[in-house]
Amino acid sequence: MQSKVRVAIAILICISCLQLICQKSGGQIPVGAPPTSSTQHPVTPPTPSANTSDVIRKAWTEHLRRSTVSFGTVQTIGGVQTFRAIGTGVLVAHSVPGNGFKVGIATARHVFDDPTKGWRPSDLHVRFAAEEGRTFAQDIGYPITLLAAGGTSLWLSIDGSDVAVIGLTDAFVSQLPPGLLTDGIGDQDFASADDLFEGEAVLVFGFPSDTQVLMGPDVLVRAVTRAGVVAWVNPQQPLENVFMLDANILPGNSGGPVFQVPTGLDKYGNFHVGGRASLLGIVTATLTDHDVVGVGGLGRVEPASVVKKILLALP
Image 1 (spheres, rainbow, N blue to C red):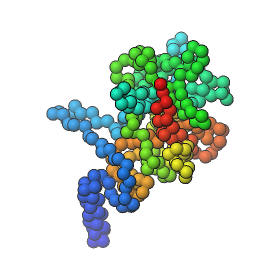
Image 2: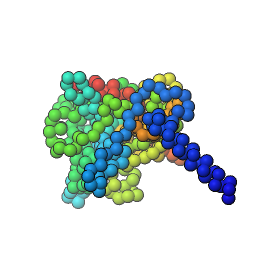
Image 3: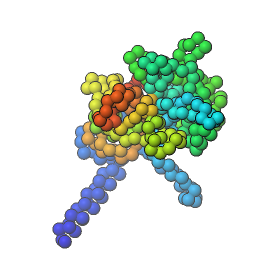
Image 4: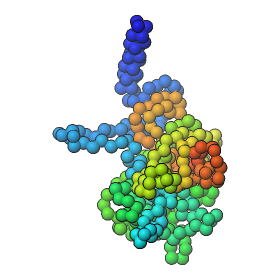
């Protein structure tokens, strides 16, 4: 009995020491190599009101999920127009000094253009997170034009990449009610070289159609969250090359954002508490896309650096 008491006391002492170290180091426990100069963004809790029961505390993932959108087509089912999700996208923005922001939606290129399937739609519909309170039959989203009158693509990509970004034009934004574009991934949310490494914990958001079998036809009104790890990175400039993800992703996750989980061990073995989740990349393919069976949810991800290059090239 005495030995158990001693162990319990020792554990309490260790926890107290760790809390003290966290307070002195701003949320970082230096157990490994010295951290790099990458900026840590502390999480600011909501300010309590006079009546604390009025405060709605949202999950730290809420901003990430609300930055995620679904692309789809419109079908007539039983005489009712109904949205059908076919892919995922993420709202991204870049600050232009003296000229506001460049805003677009990043996704997998094959959501817009897949020559192997003869798929090149002139337009799709997009649904935002703020619409999740309504079913696909109640809300079919908003039409977004992908091809100009002459067949020219209104979205951009780069050679050898399966990432595409379409800019949000004034004409498109003008049809949206207030409150749909409240969230997005900005310059400060893109990953740095220290954010991407093998074993890094990640979250993936998307609209995999297979989940409808389990949960019913209206499950995809809200983005599905998957957890996983970075399984492999290119040893040569990992942030500039595709990497592999193990997160049990499925068809329909194409174009979905992959975010770093901010709390946990960093690349150098230091333990971080809190912070801002960074965009690591975009899901562009899964092994199930290629009829490979029995290998889990491995997927191909193109890095956020490619998304940023395309976003910067938008007119």
